[in-house]
Length: 444
Image (cartoon, rainbow, N blue to C red; front, top):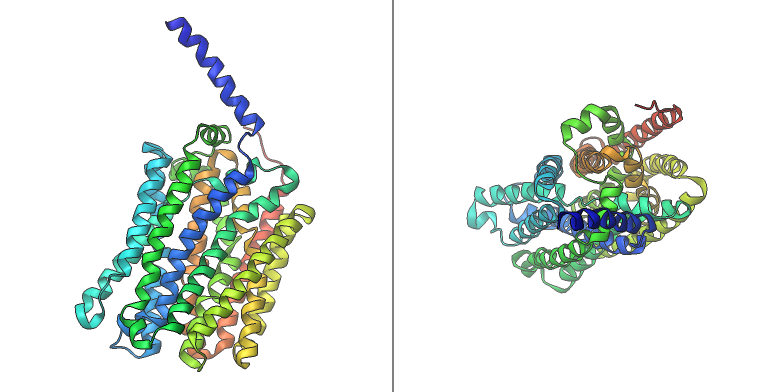
């Protein structure tokens, strides 16, 4: 019996390695799971972001003026981004001890239940300060959960793709971000435009949070169906896409982690500067209906998807570095003209959104792929997850709060300067990355 087992084990290992080498799992199979997963995550987050502008100031902070209520709502928005790196640490430990399936199940279940529970939070008039406390706790829980949804499929997608199409497939995961926010915008626009203001603030706003749970369930099964197959396990192991302790990652690649945070900073800041911040400005300081603006944002999301496809195609021909550099310069230029557009009536607002999504899609398409490419295989899984969490926190987490606060104090031009600072950080980090990449690596 022992000899039979010994004979079968090498054969089985040979079959597993042969499966990995031949890539029986196609990049398109991975792409489906990645897009579904990212769509569910960003839908959850953007549903909360929209509600922080058009719902929570009236229901959770009715004792404050609309501007102050919106600013405190943006504090709640930031809580999830602060909690996300902690969630990455927590769920990476869970992944190492119990496996990717357990980690994904727990994190996505926590994300779904936290989001649907937000739709059940009573108003301040009903529960007083407990309403604020409950919403803050659920937002932190949502952020912790998002830190655990990293499944390694995005870097695996780039690795398994052919070299000639690697830039295109590195773009695919980001499609879910724009699709998620577009679906959320359309759903809220429908509710705002078909319900009376009283009905919407009473019960209509809750439906998107309930829809989020259903989307998360679909995403959970879609991703587990992929990551738990033997073929995918072989690919994860063969490419060393397994979690490593954060302490080891920081000791071996601490400089890379620090540098990587700034590489996608501009595009992550741009994400909220063309979605949440302009929605708050339009809602607070203009007479334009929020439903109409949300539809404009949905149309902008379609423009963003097209820009992403072009970016993916172009990166395979000129390289990811040029895409990111051009995109950061474009974000810097947009930061200077954006204040003029927001003050130029409906035509200016529409131009702001369309131009913003065009630049966002072009740059965001390659941001995560750039982060993953900074790491060697040994720390790519943990390093990419932790850097992404930190970059989203610094780039997007505080953007709506800072932009609205600065524009209120000093005018819209100050919000443009805030976005410009993100573009400068990205350009400087890309210059350093280029210099580092030119240095020959010392073999251990």
